[in-house]
Image (cartoon, rainbow, N blue to C red):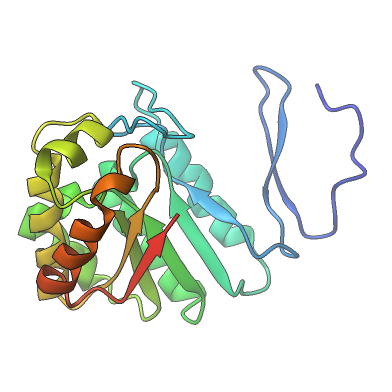
Length: 212
């Protein structure tokens, strides 16, 4: 093991051991309000300021298996959990398995999923998410500008703005809760007033807007 001490571990912590490199990683702490289900390192965007740059390898199967085991091992219902990545929607049907497992075991736990929202432009996928019927679920989706060129430049993906906007409206169509996230930096701040106006006029169904 590469770990020098274990003093940070507490009763009911869930720990993942990596036999290949000797890493021991605490993946769940019941005393924390900031636990995450890390879905994948893959992403279909490559945001300029991303703290988790995408990795081009298919890790969805192994990580889904681990995440379902983490959910099984959690003893007491957490007040909240975050599903994040990478881009969680790249799991496809495996994502619905995770959300369903959380719904069945912890129906009162608030689940917040961070996603770029692009795949929701396809209504079939959005319908499948809605069909999980998680009673306490919200999506956190970034929108960086009212101008498609600026948004696409920030996320480094062609047509990302159009897909995100279509996805937001599909999610609203199915009654899913949405938080918009705007990361403030040199590229996004100059058009912030126009973005606020755009959200006010076109995305009235959004429940919360976070400036970060």
